[in-house]
Image (cartoon, rainbow, N blue to C red; front, side, top):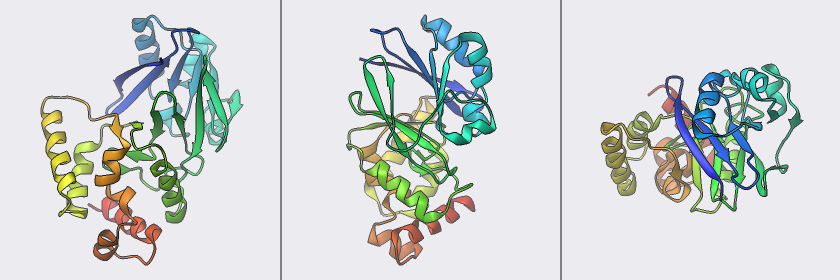
Length: 251
């Protein structure tokens, strides 16, 4: 089985290393801080052999150069990452990447950036989703448009409900406040928000999060719910999503 090492990076990012004990390969999922990734890999006794970028933002691909210089790792990324570093293999929706005998499916989750991708490892029951979706939230729509982003979230919603989503930031407390504002009658959300508050009070992480729970509580994944459409407007789910995203931007 793959081993996943999660650690804090920068001010509120999470770093992820995935390691296949059989092959000895290790993949860095995004690279917010190259030095910290190298430090964490050394502490684990792992050698980084691959980098899997989700999108081009510097807090996700800014450490590529330092890691490649130290390890010679292969960079696998969407085309947009060439804004920050060379890419050894460009991937897009429908492609597959491997670490040892484990296969990850590449999913188009554009919206936060146009080329944003996620990596789903079905045999391990995990998906690395970058900034496309968060616990009780989703990324800001910097480059995309609402229909595109909603379609991306539909792809995430279509994963097996038991999938654990490894999102890239510890934003859950702030997301919970908006979610309660967006959907105040949701009892499952109320319970989840209480758990989050208790975890953060103990300085515990809220990532990863299980898709099944997000489907019941995350307003951005529930923009097709008639009750949210009635409250937030929109004659189609992507329009309700747009209203929710604008509401969060100004919350």
